[in-house]
Image 1 (tube, rainbow, N blue to C red):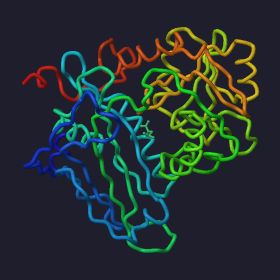
Image 2 (image 1 turned 180 degrees about the vertical axis):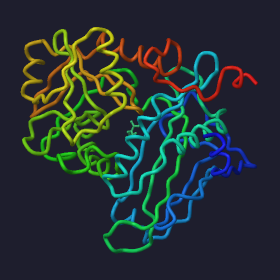
Image 3 (image 1 turned 135 degrees about the vertical axis):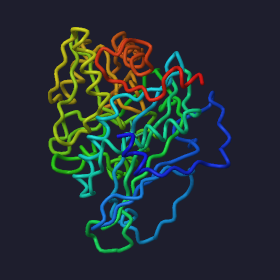
Amino acid sequence: MQGELNNQLKIEKTTSPRVKPDYDKLGFGIHLTDHMFTMDFESGKGWHDAKIVPYGPIPMDPAAKVFHYGQTIFEGMKAYTGPDGSIRLFRPEKNFERFNRSCRRMNIPEVDAAFVLEALKELVRIDREWVPAEPGMSLYIRPFVIATEPQLGATPSLSYKMMIILSPVGAYYEEGLNPVRIHVETRDVRAVVGGVGEAKTAGNYAASMQAQENAHAAGYSQVLWLDGVHRRYVEEVGSMNVFFRIGDKVVTPALSGSILQGITRDSVIHLLRDLDIEVEERPITIDELCGYAEDGTLLEAFGTGTAAVISPIGEIGWNGRSYSIGGGQTGEWTQRLYDELTSLQRGDSEDRFGWTQTIVGAEAARG
Ligand code: COI
């Protein structure tokens, strides 16, 4: 793959590196690194012209289909610095599997997953000085594809651009590991089975913004989404999958076809089972859930996602009533999962699942 990469990937390094931000005040996705990956697709020619170039704006035709019909998909992944200075990716092959699934759903040509993963590793190696070293911080990686054909017909684009950009990040939510209050959305829906809820595509996020703003105005941080047909089954929270500790087991909504197939979700299920905790992936209604909150068996709740990692939930607001969870505190299992997951990601603990890929070794990091 390295030989193929050298042949297919052109690299142009910046001559004017950007000023690095204050890593104590990173926020999320605000600062971008020195370089980016780009690759183009044209019908009849396929994906071509893969290169790593200095980060900067790209020229776009105002008629490009992405602006009008939203033909676009993205991924979110992270690189972590370990205690010895080495840099790792976490289950990156899963992101590119999902990247191609999202491409298929949005009628975008798939990419060579092995090739773009190697190109991504090269990009992170080039910008490795940007990968934060502190626990709780990481380098967020955003691969995406946009439809670029300049033509206003509502038909699949004949040209596309894939890019990967990088951003050193801290916590996604201001609350960090402090529990958030979530509001059950009863008017809008995020997705329906057969729609694009399983794909990581921009429209899912755009469609959620009004409810998100309404929740904020009502004093909540996040929206809890219900299914679009019965308006009863719990689906996701904010831009995360959701888990509930009910007594001595954990319940998470089953992948129904309208829920994102989260990689952090899958990792948390593995971690729970490894801890001999029973996990049920099944439909769960909001009535059932609030019933458990009332009778005291809903002990913990949390969301999972690459950006947010694990985000505890301390309260649910539904139909004008408020349901407290775990006294509004971060639960014991939530904290344990956060610690287990982040120490695996950083390489603090032994990688017993084979989930990490070291891309800059400790020696190279020192050199
Ligand atoms: C992620 O968790 O990586 C996502 O893509 C969610 C996004 C809203 C930041």
